[in-house]
Each structure stands twice: as C-alpha cells, then as structure tokens.
Image 1 (tube, rainbow over the protein chains, first blue to last red):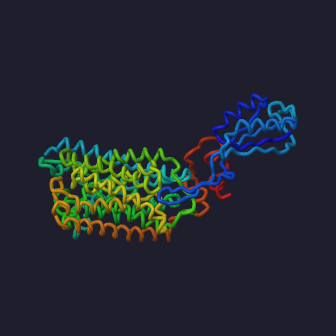
Image 2: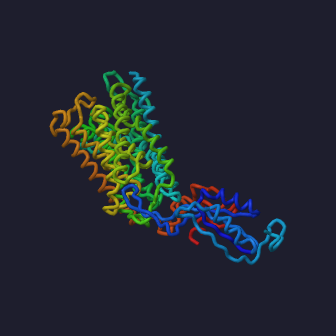
Length: 112
Length: 443
C-alpha cells in the first residue's frame, strides 16, 4: 500500500474529488496548506512598508491505495488538478506499513 | 430655572454617542492586531471605560471644571464626588436661551471624552503591554495630564466656574471638541509609550497584518456615528452651532477617506479597506477642533489635507524605527496637529467660532494661537507620559515577557483566546483539564 499526497490549487479540489471517486477511491483526507514551488513570491507594499509574500494557499489531498493502483491514481489526480499554469502543485507517494479500519479493526488491504 | 429640554436631550444623547465610540475604538483597534492579541487590545479600551468613569466622578470632573485653582492650569476640588450637582441650577444657555443643560449632563458628556482619550493611547502598545501596568498608567496619566489639559482647553470662564483654563480663555485658541485635548494629547502619549515599551518582536520584519478587517470597518463606522456626538454635541445645545459642526464632521470625514484612498492608490497601487477606515478616522480627528470654525467647503479641505498627510505619516514609524503599532501618532497626533493648525488658515467669521483665519484676511493672529496650543499640549503630554511610563516600567514592569509575547498576550495575560473555533484551534482547551493555563504556557 502507498500513501499518495497531492498538493494542489484549492479551487481544483472538487475536480480531484470527483475524479478519484469515479476511479473507485473511496477514502480521502483533505487539509489546508500553504506553499510555493518555483513560482516564488512577490513584493507587496502595505501601510507604507514593503513585505515579501511567498506562501500561497494550497490544499493537501491524501489517499491510501493498493500498490497496483498507485500509478493510475496519481495520473487521475494530475489530470484533474492540472490547469497548465504555474503553481499547479505536486503529487508523490510513500510506502505505508499498516492500515486499520477504526470501526471494525480490519487490517491491510481490507481496510482500504 | 428649568433647563432647556432640547439642549439637554441633545447633550445626553451625544454623551451616549461618544461613549459608543470607545467600544467602537476597541473594534477598530482589535481588528487591526493579530488574532492572538485582539482581546488585550479591546480590554485596554474596556479597562479605560471602567477606570476613568470612576475617577471622573470622584475627582476628575472637579479638577477639569472646578473653579480655577491657579493660572488657568487646574481646577479646584469643589466638585469632588460631584458634590452639590444633584440638583444644581442649569448651566448657562449657549445660543441665547436663558438656561442650558443640567450640570450632570455636562459631567456625563465630558466623562466620555476623558474615557476615549485614554483608550486611544492603547493603540500604540499593541501585543506587548501588561494589563495591570496599563491600568496604572491610565489612572496616573488621566490624573496628571488629561484632567489639567481638559481644564486648559474645555473650561470656559463663567460656564462651570468663574474662571476656566488658559488655552480657552487667555490664549483663545480654537479647539471646539478637543483636537488638542483629546487627539494631540493621546497621540503624544502614544508616541511616548511606544518609545518606552520598545518595538514588538518581529517589527519591521514580519507583516503583522490586521487579523479581521471587517471589525476594523465596523469600528470605523461606529466611530463616525459616535463622533457626531463628539463634535456636534460640543455645541452643548441643540441649535445652529450643532448643525454646522455636524455638517462639517460629515463632509471632512468623507473627503479624508477619499484622499487616503487616492494616496494609497498612487503610492502603493491598491486602495485598501484599512485605508478607507483610517481615512475616516483621520478626517474625524482633523475636523474635531475645526468643526465650529470653518465652512463646509473648508471642512472638505481640512479632511482632504488630513487624509493625505496622515496616509503618508503612517509610514514614518518604519523610517524612524518606533513601533506605534496602530498609528496613534500617524492619525491622532498628526491629524490633530493638521486640524488644529488649519483653523488658523481656513477659519471664517461666518462660522459659529466667528474668527477669520489667514485665508479670510485674519492674518496669522489665530494661527499662532493654534500653534501654541498644539505645542503646549504635545510637549506636556509627551514628557509626562514618558516619565510615567518609564517609572512604571522600572518598578512593576510595563512590557510582558518575550515568551508571552510570542505565545500571545491574550492567552498569557487574560487566559483567553478570542477564537475557539474547534478542538484544535484557539487555545485547545480540554474539558476538565487539571493543568492550569500558566503551566501549559510555560511548559
């Protein structure tokens, strides 16, 4: 099993959720985040003083999937989150040791 | 003799309007600070409301409006505890009527001026002042600075006592509603305290943006509303003077807000809501002394000039390196000086104050009087506030610990968090937690 993490533009969340559901992923965790990649920041003047603004609001989407689905799920996320403009984000995966369903205690792939 | 019912109704209403300005100020200031310090900023206003009200009744009114005790500098103790005023004869009529308002109406009206003057200072020391020390400062500064200055500027010969204060009666500077006694006074004290307490951690590096601009705008709206009581109520009667003051207050404020927005747009590229709200306050401050002395077109000029100059002035703190956190200096001190001096130029004898400024052929006669009044209040307030603040700092300490400032003054000083939005946000209180706030914060 793998944990797939995607940092995407906030307004693309609905598209990503819909696409994942269509694919067959039934669990998802979403958190608010801030960040930047190569899009850097810009300088702003506020109340007579200059500030550098670099962090941009993002959304973090996390799903745990079976090894066989990893490449496909990452493709689904990339296609649905893409706008073609700078700041679209990134997707990555890491291995997961164990998953447990809290309600029933099921472990492993049955818990997905 | 029966008091004038119209005058009394208006002055009592105005007193309530001006009182509303202090919670309005609390919202205006509160929205401008970060979420972790909004409560402390509001508490400094509410603390002033409590303390200064009581001191005013006990001895403040007497020192300000009792018969002069010497050289026009301070009143006497004849009205301590408002002695004798429960059923005293009405004060004199102001626009030809035989009798004016009951003394207690005047007491109440002036009380709310004292309160907000003290509350204004708190904007300079956001995020880093001990609440107890603030209250001690408030009480001492009110006693040795505000009460005397109110006597200088607001106590007219023959109104509440035979002899009043020197600025009103000897110097004859025009300050209708307190551009000097309230705004220059508070602004100078704010500067002094900003210097005594020093800069906030991160000042000049972190952005420290307002956490809730909607509160700022609500506060500005309430201030504008209440200020009609502040300015038009200072006519102490319901007649033409009040109407003139009202009109000038309306249009100067509008012009100032537009001028601030324009300045921002030209300088920074954006017209901001904070600028609109600040422009409103800058205009209100500047027209405060002048509302009885200029005509409405003059009021537009006063507002526009104040809007531009204050918008530029708020950047000075970064240039000179003092942390006047919420621009008490840039708006109240600068705006108060602008309004006070412009009277010397734009006053017209057609207005209730009946004096011609430079532009209307009056020469510089009024202008120098305005300058002396502004300078005297500025220096007196600044020096004494600096001394009082330093003494407090060296004895009980004025500034909170560095750790506390980083955690947040609300939590460390008031054991509260303004926004308990869920189990994780805010202070993360656990039901029935045995650990005290102090332990959790210091851990």
